[in-house]
Amino acid sequence: MSILNPTPLDRMNDPRGRPYFLWDMEMSLGQFQEALRHEDPEIRAYFLGKLMRQAKPDDVFSFISLTEIMESWLRIQRYLGESKAFWSWILNLWEEPHEVVVEGARILVDTRHEILTSKLCTLLERSELRDLLDVRVLLEGGGDLERALSDAPSQDAGFSPLTLAWVLGQLPITRLSEASGWPKDESTELERFRDEFVQKITSLAAPE
Image 1 (cartoon, rainbow, N blue to C red):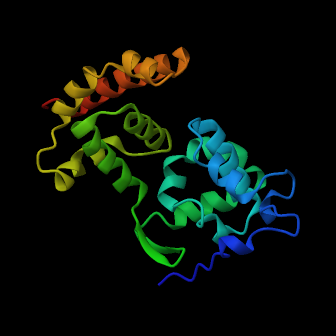
Image 2 (image 1 turned 120 degrees about the vertical axis):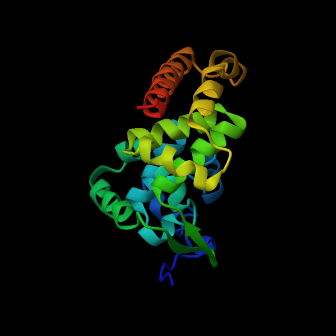
Image 3 (image 1 turned 135 degrees about the vertical axis):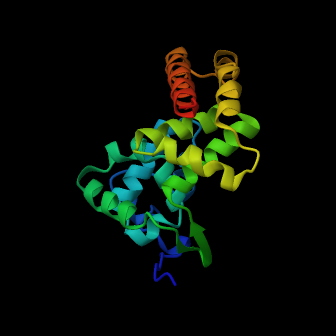
């Protein structure tokens, strides 16, 4: 049972109509919520970092789930300042599945390993750039690819590491990123990661 007790959203504004944790800028609660949905992941990370740095920890979960924090951790952490140590401790403490209560709803949060395993299965099903980016972040954050590849068939009986490598190798990253309006350097970096990722998968799957 969770004892998290977030402040209701309608009570977060100060006398000037700003969320109390945005004391250093002029922004309404609605504008802040829009910023958290911005299409640029770096802008989202900046405002999430401000939220995690300046709000009560309990209130953070009125805006974002623990799963989302874990998936975006590498981007968020650079904006946390001195609060980075606290949030690193929380994430490590909550590595096992657990329940949190957000706006009255109990949510079972997966571990980062379970999220990585699930993302590998998702990549085999639909192979979208967003999912590939998520996998990159999870692996850069210390995810165990070999263990996730081994556990993936327990989530999807049809999962195959070699099939995943083949599917990813055919993914038209340049075309898809251009269609989404991505900068060329981001597309090139993701393509580089994809190629290294495919090589790693095939190496791990090679018969002994």
